[in-house]
Length: 280
Image (cartoon, rainbow, N blue to C red):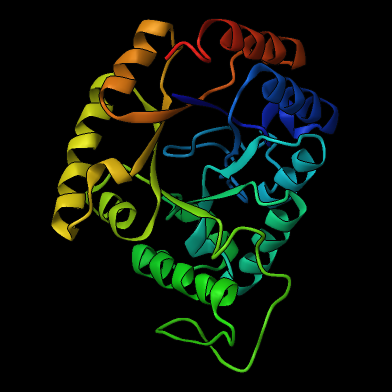
């Protein structure tokens, strides 16, 4: 079982001193990865389904991970997730390639399609066809990252006779992970990604997601065991709970940060390193 830490770009970790301290401590404790969340803007006042208040600090994922990369040497750096249909895929491909180069190939590109319509409206991104656009945007980004002479012709993205350097350090491109708890999300993970990421799940809801992922893999002729499953548990995790996730096929637990300041974050990292890492 690999262990990650969620939220290296938000809350108390939106401030550089704490982000650097928590990332270094996580690496020293044996964590495999740290992960960012993303909302470019948030509704004000907060209203469902917005996850946090509008004044909750949240750094841009790529910028935050590049900063953390400079303070660590082994931690994988995951976007958990980037809302791809809100982004310009060509610009994002450059940003992520830059982060992968600066981190010496430690980036994991986690993708979501988004669910907050006020955020899409403020950005000027259409709220329809989010899944289809995400798939096309990803294909266009992979073309930029991997083709000797990049070109792409799609419904929303078209380019030819262009190039973007440097390419990512990882070849042919950074690891891809799709998030989401729907049949469509499971299909995207099975068809297009190395892994799937489920957020804020308990053991029971994870089991249901795993059933959906198995079906999606079977439909496209992919071995389920080849799909790396990552989950952020809804509550605190002890050794027994972690083993239950592992028994379902989960290979990475990305833990929510507990507490509200640097000291409590560092205490949690130390506790996980002592009680969970290396025990499963």
